[in-house]
Amino acid sequence: MKLARRKFLKVGASGIALAATAGCDRMPRELRQLLALVNPGGGPFQAPAADTIDPIIHALNRAGFGPRPGDYQMARKLAKTPEEAAVAYLEQQLHPETIQDEDAEHAARRFETLQEPPGELFEYQPDLLQNELMRATLTRAVLSERQLFEVMAEFWSDHFNIDPSKGDCKWLKIVDDREVIRKHALGKFADLLRASALSPAMLWYLDGRVNRRANLADKPNENYARELLELHTLGVHGGYTQKDVMEVARCLTGWTVRSTINAPYFQIGKVEFDPALHDFGSKIILSQTVPSTDTTLSKDQLEQRGRQELDRVLEIVAAHPATALHISTKLCRHFIADNPPPAAVATVSDAFTKSGGDVRETLRALYQTDGFLLTRGNKFKRPFSFAVSALRATGARTDCGTEIIDYLKRMGHAPFNYPTPEGYPDQAAPWMGTLLWRWNFAVALSQNQIKGTRVEVDALRESAGGDERLMAHLLGRKPNRAEAQAFADSGDGLALMLASPAFQWC
Image 1: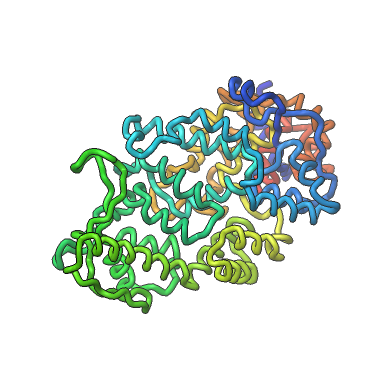
Image 2: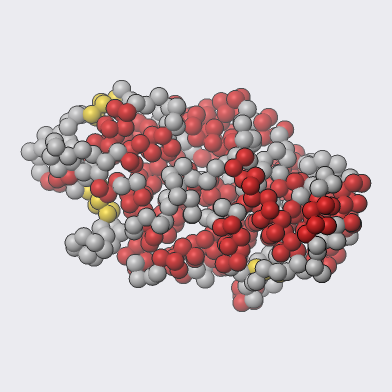
């Protein structure tokens, strides 16, 4: 059935808002893979029955990309009360290694370039690599049982943003995603920071590979040093000075990446340290001295000392109180509110410091704050989260293909496409201009107009137990009378709910 846009918008403007759902089929994964199905609708499932968003729905929305049919009842069985069940679910998600995720990994395995070593990636066209990385990211977000892990992979991808269009980043971002972001997403921040600093893609993107000082006349390249302090650790108001930036840049001179444009033309993408390009003079960083090195030492000794300077810089900035505050503020902004409550930030910052930057412990503390527990329905989904939650919510069968990626590009939020180092914004205001394309996506999805993606609307309604329960499942709460009326009058209740404020604010 074709729905007139004017009628759709008229009904939507009546003030009705609806939220998230999804579906998961129990087919053998090989058959599901063959048919390119992701989360098709399954059997009967339980919908929330409260008048307001309960703790379980809140946890499913914030620590993941929204519930699929069956997710609510699965989480509800974890404990006697919704509050206890939400806590149990979050604790489970903090240990992704204990969660069986064979289906998601099997689906992502078809993107074979993601496992290639750095040198082999240069045999592929960059557009293919970018396409496979985006589609794999979308596939995992839709399919994975390890939802918090995927949320944190997205979070750190923004925090350590790399634009793949620059130089060898076209090929090396694949390695960065695998060996930096995904490897350390729920580990220690210091390990993640070091992996990023020595990522061949990051060395290309922020010019670390050309940061050298072969003699006193050379001026170090400060690009990475500045972003290390401003974005990755202390934050723009973290108390560092321009002198600190230059001293950090001096400490990081001498790191290179083998490329296709310089000899020896093999082991492309390998990161190396060249003592001949390093500044071994004394430096002072954030009031801490990095002593000079006697340059008459052997080459091996000089290489060891130069590598130690990188470790010393990262140790200083990772342990700085401003870094704990900066990271905690960003985490609270992502999981609690655009303007996070100071009390929550302070609690999370303290946990970050006491745990030595342990991401799990930091998140565990965040999930126990009143700010997280009591603040619901106030975070506006970014376009990627909106699209993924819609696919999960509807139990869509999808190949996570280029048509969905094209929608994300039109909404300005395709993965790994942000051109500047700060990454995609994590507040509502910059995304308000995407509403029309969200409406278009909702209608196209509900009416099966997206190639490679299909929603069985009647089966979804039947599995939910009728319209009222389907709305409750999507809203995360019982619908009120006006919402039920709007659903009935819209001509496409599913599209209305997906495009409505209640679905888009979680």
